[in-house]
Image 1 (tube, rainbow, N blue to C red):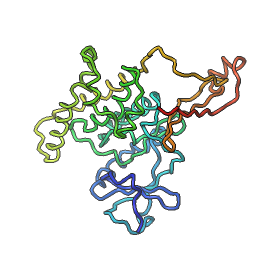
Image 2 (cartoon, rainbow, N blue to C red):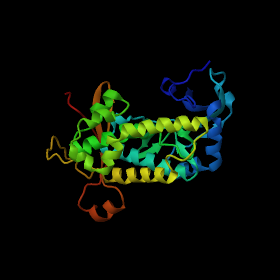
Image 3 (cartoon, rainbow, N blue to C red):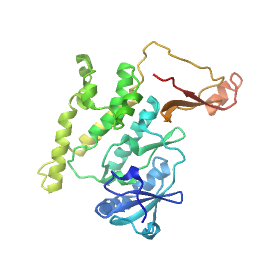
Image 4 (cartoon, rainbow, N blue to C red):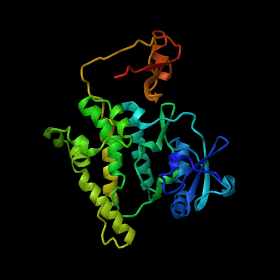
Length: 317
């Protein structure tokens, strides 16, 4: 009997299997109604065409043989050649992944769909472009529900970005230590009173505990199907996501005034730097070389055109 990959055990909607290098994902009976609804809207196909989500093809259940779970559907997805994790990403990569997550959720709401969580691990990179990989995160939106993924988004996307934007501190080591993001409660201890004069910091960091309690209460009411009024209108949900998108778009790493190390590549850097770990050592990789219409038009005579991929190992602490 084939067993699911260990990394997918936490997903209550379905599990991931690998057979002869091919990747399959199950849809369990209790999630089938959401899977069918999302499929009927054509939303995922639209995202596939836009390049924002990996394609998934529904296949016969028999392809897996006997499995120890109540499977309703099976889908096949492409196998990624290279997998990275949020605690390995640079500031710009984490920012791009956060913006993709918000854009997908906003587009989904237009179809009566939302995301069940806000995990940064649902995003991978194809080159320098973020792509969403968790098809089973999509489910039907229930009018009035609080954003259940707000705290997870804050801890896995927003707070790591703010750590660098407000204090000039890289998120990687702290994030790698927890692997579930940076707790809002811990980050709040770094903030000064002046930070709370920023409305975004106040609502998404300072008042996070209040939002969390409201989200749990709303989910309890929604399960009982007796929600008397809408505690969080759809228009407010959209404004929250749009506000976060605008705020995160404006975030940039704080300039500490210190150049700790530099290296001359010999040509222009034309990609976002990525970081990753191997055998306990952290590495940074970036591509350089002339490329793109603008660079070709304006810098072709001034800059070497050769392409290179540079990888640097960080010194042990």
